[in-house]
Image (cartoon, rainbow, N blue to C red; front, side, top):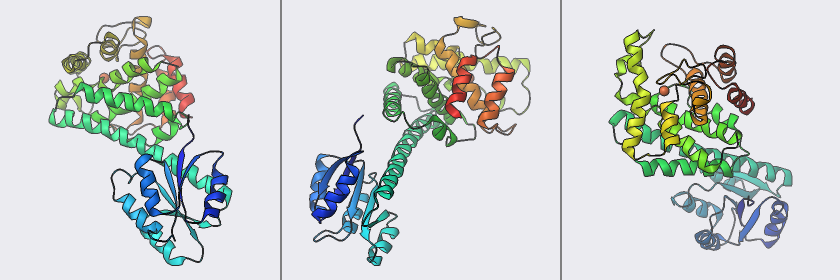
Length: 348
Ligand SMILES: [Fe+2]
């Protein structure tokens, strides 16, 4: 993977040289000696972060920063100001813009540490923007019954897998610790898709397999839209008739996925069989063991984990550790133990 690209803006050649030397081992550097030159450089290439001197002739760093933050093309790029200790007014203005700063002369360790931190935040923000894109799509579907569009789902799945491949060093635990903790239909589907992505990668699934897996996971419960919500969200035990009605959501999810244009049998089978259990006690077909596809087994584990580790109307959430221990203790005949153990290794 390429080193991250940093734009260094400073009118003093000696500063460009010093900071450039500190960063060159871990980053690619592009330089500009003033605000105008920086704007020109940004039209050609978008860096992952900008290190920006404040006091410069013509356009100063504060003016440039304001301009960049008000432009949708550049607003997302994190900026760190470089300024001298005796320039208190500039520090006050940097703070008022909500922009981080480092004092010159920069200490190499501090600079490296601050850059690493800022770049992790960029990735985490990008991940959660993607997360909320999918949650918004499903939210519209569940609340307003706006049909789900296959090309939007395909695009999201591709973006999420590509993101995860590019930033595989970011831990599953970090993301999962920050996922929504209260259960609702849209976020449950997105959570299961994200969990399945992490688990599928840990199981060395190919890009193509991950794509089918994540699509199935994202759609696995959409059939719940056809089930009477008073039954679906009933507090307390369901009677036998209600339980049979709820079970229909797996088949209904498949019907809706077909209506969207999904034809691939690995995806449709994974959706249909996400409640099958290894001992044959699941539904809708009572399949057992390896009659259940690997995708359905992955989604089955992630589905139970998310249901246990999110807050429900009828009980408190389990923390990740307790949820996984409960699954190991109470469901070894039903869920794939290796997959549960793999999740444990990812989350702890
Ligand atoms: Fe389900």
